[in-house]
Image (cartoon, rainbow, N blue to C red):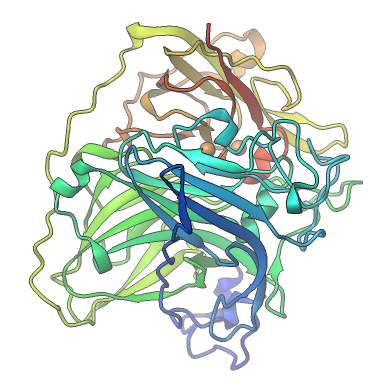
Length: 524
Ligand code: C2O
Ligand code: CU
Ligand code: CU
């Protein structure tokens, strides 16, 4: 890291002029963390709350010393407005594309779905939702402004979310084939919270003491505009070209670069989301403050787990409670310990400087509920699915699922109302966050195996015992860290809906470059 050149007194050597492209010049903790605003339904349709949310270009202030930045946002906001619903209460959302015809980020026309498609296309996926296929936001269900052009699986303008699942933290984001990484990076992401009765009983911190936190990394040009590379760090004939990974040089939380949050000395509930393109974070307070995880992607854990850090791959969520009551007067930085850099190792700062408004009656639950665990013996199908490196027709590295391209015929075809176990065999050198649409799954275990043997013989020779999931990920998940050199096993029940969905790596640069596969749930 070139952070070293600043020596030991980074603040005293700060140049006076802020250059958004140079993190050394960007003062940290100068903007307060915003709370994403709540979406409001505009009317009732068929007795359901009906929302209209418009994707449009807008200006956004990432930092008080930056010029305004062009973004694309839901209702022009970044993050998008938070949709809050009750379990089992259906809502309707019309997602409207009012974006310009040209993208402001470098579009690679060689990627799947990009050739012969309008440059700017969008489709909204509600990540983690139990939803019918025509409202899932399938990558080919994209549409352009006024629905003038639509993709091959486009079926309806108004999406129906039945919210038939546990209370939890979901998020919605763009999913258009071949440009998901650019659309999400441009700002198209927001929270979707489902509330339920169990949550009410737990007496968790709520209202002003419950805050969703979306972490993304970004880079900026000198003029404050968003920077995204148009070529990988190795020679290629394609330009603009997709890159194998994106690593921003700043951290943006709820739309602000390295914000701070004023808090009272009491308990807070934070809904953490890693909304980054590629980056994983291991979140830890600089003073080793212990906190409690109460929920995962798809709902509450069986019991709260005391932790000092949480690992979040892209798209993973953690529902946590932090008790600041012993820290009045202190300023505590939340760090990313996967990154030792002076800049991207820093997420945000909590200032325990607000006076306590009243007695904190909220609770940290101990036992929460009993998860009805799916058993391996119940599985109708066990699939072995590899993650592997390959090369595309332009000589670029490409990662594949099951050694197949996005365009290859569907092979993951679970039967409706059956249970399946998927063995995700990671043959690559790094972890990938694997996400399956429609379902919430449980992690069975991860087990190391001999990669070289596998490459020679196609046989899995285990080199160690299975490792059960960590306590904090032992609940309902829709995205799992598939470790390098391990077989990660997940179990899920394909119930409620049948039809066309997808599964993919949630590193968006991988997803857009064929690390995505169709999935079809088949009704007899
Ligand atoms: Cu969050 Cu298919 O994605
Ligand atoms: Cu999803
Ligand atoms: Cu990947």
